Structure formats: C-alpha cells, structure tokens
Image (tube, rainbow, N blue to C red):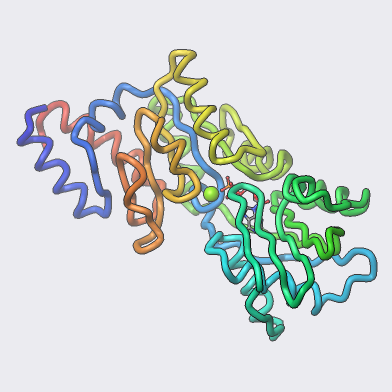
Length: 293
Ligand code: ADP
Ligand code: MG
C-alpha cells in the first residue's frame, strides 16, 4: 500500500479506538500465522473478584485480609484490586505497608506492622522460603480446576489462606477465537497462571495450545522459540506485564481500556479493550492491501 493509503488507514483505525504505531503492521498482520493471547485482562474481563476465602491453620479471616490488603493496596494488578475490593466490601480496614516489593508474574510481599506478609503464587512462596502445607497445595489445585486463580497469603512465611479469585471470559471471546481459526490462525494462550486454570480456558475456547506458569520474560522467550520454528507471531497482551513479549512479536497488540493502556508497548494499542478488534484488524489490513479503504 502507498504511504497515503496507510496514513488514511491509521487515521480510520484511531477513530475505532485502535492506535497503529507503525505503518507496516497491516502487511505483517496478514503475513502472520500464529496468535498468542495473554489470559487475565485479555481473554477475560480482567475484573476478577474473590469468590472464596479458604482459611488454613486457624487463621483469622479479618487479620489475614487486613495483612493481604495492606501489601496489595500498592499494586495495580487486577488480582490486587480484587483482594483490596474484598476488604472494602467486608469493611476490613488496612494500614499502609512499611515495605513493599512486587515480583511480576508471582505476587507482592512486604512488611505490615512489623510482620512479613506475602501474597502470590507457589513460586513466590518458594522464592521467600515459605512453608506451604499439603492442604494449601490441594486448595490451589482445586481452585485451578474450577477455572479460578488461587492466591496464597503468607504470614511470617507460612501459608495462612488461599484466596480463590474468579474472572469471567469476555463475552466476545468464543466467537472471536472461532473467527480467527477460520482465518487459518493457530491460536493459543500464554499465561502466568496455574496449569489447571489455563487448561480450563484452553478447553472452553477450543484453543490449539496453552502455556502456563510463564513469567513476562518466558512469554518473550516463547515468542522467539515459535519464530525460530518458522512461525510469524501476533502477541496480544497487556502493555505493562507483557511488554517484553509485545516487543519481540512480529505484531504486538496491547489491550486495555483508556488510561490502563501503556502506550509505550506494542505496535498496535487497543483502547476499546475488545477482542473483536483482532478480526477487525485482519479485515482492515486486507482492505489496505487492496487499497480500497
Ligand atoms: P496472566 O498471565 O494470567 O495475566 P500474570 O503474569 O500477571 O498473569 O501473573 C501470574 C500469576 O502471578 C498470577 O496468576 C498470580 O498467581 C501471581 N500474581 C501476580 N501478581 C500478583 C499480585 N499482585 N497479587 C497476587 N498474585 C499475583
Ligand atoms: Mg496479564
């Protein structure tokens, strides 16, 4: 397509809430054969809620929530918001943490009123040398099989509670996946979440592949690996956590709603947060190629 056609296309796309940051993405998107989707906030609504609080070792619910919400209040992660929302709805007040550290893909930890608190997955517990009982591991496994995300609250390096957090699929997810498969794409998930939960979404959507337990760096490695094997990859994820994968993909699509979107990452930034943008981009790119926009 000529520069003029591309300029017009970029302008038209922006009116639909799709920011195109490089004119060659129209060609690249047509030339690609594999789509990798992030889970939380990409195929799911990304507004998860705490659906169950499994207390362990005589933990007091209010105390656990207070500690967890204190460290999570410093994070913008969708899971953090769900946990803080739980304290708000149960009227549990929480202080500012004295220390706070965030480990992308694992969780957060810090110091609350002199007590060490960590909230995150099994890897975070292992990193901190925390003890995780068989009982806790069983609850983690069961939550995953229900398609929910388990988050462990560690107090003084001991698993005290498993919070079960549920999210729902975006309403357009199934039809968009079907449309993309009809286009001939191989399509799957790359998620930091646990195996059972990721498999649940893979089966529900009928995806071709799924990878779980991935750190942001691992997602970028997965993209490189697929490229090495000859695939041309579109990665769709959130602009913050998935920035490394968005950068190495042939086409990086950052999803979000308005202010949530990090506009630094991705060749394409989707402001309307809708997966329908993907088939739209494909149809649109074909029109650009035929110069009939
Ligand atoms: P996804 O790939 O599903 O979007 P992330 O890479 O953001 O997930 O996170 C992977 C996992 O790390 C989460 O499922 C959760 O177990 C844990 N985690 C990450 N951030 C947090 C947090 N702020 N609080 C609790 N757990 C977290
Ligand atoms: Mg995510």
